[in-house]
Image 1 (cartoon, rainbow, N blue to C red):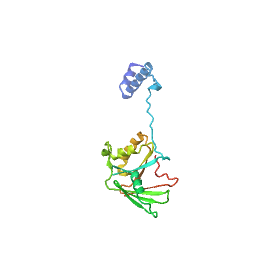
Image 2 (cartoon, rainbow, N blue to C red):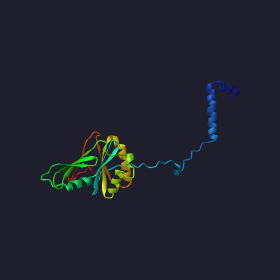
Image 3 (cartoon, rainbow, N blue to C red):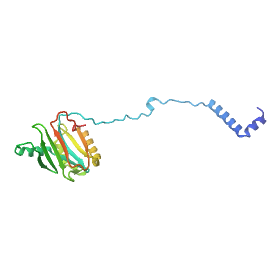
Length: 207
């Protein structure tokens, strides 16, 4: 290539691009880039995600019922209910029996000698806030001491405004190996009912 030709090439844009491309190709030949694979141990590995899916299952344990609404926890003490029923004279016919319990009224519906239903009517504003429930002598803690998870299942009726509170309660009970079941209810619902003695019922099984 003559000097004049080189000057012509440098004096225009296309020529400058040609020279730059030539120098880049020459540099790549002199200093080739080496691609080194990282060792397997050095690669970023994300820890596996564990997903817990509550699944209904049968149990032979007794059930403790609790109502969670208005961000308050209300245990329903069936022991007091059965003690009150035992102190009453035997009815002459099968008819509903009303019993007043602390913070909740109950109605007992006998169906047969082995089958019966219970309906609970919680009083407005009853139950403990989570702050009060965490105190040493709270009703919530007394229930947990009286009804251990080895023998009892905790079943919750939960309104939509208190679901986060229920999740915290369930997590704490799960950490103590306590089986938990639950059922959603409307915030304006005034009563909750459960029937015992029907074979094959899974409505109140723990998850």
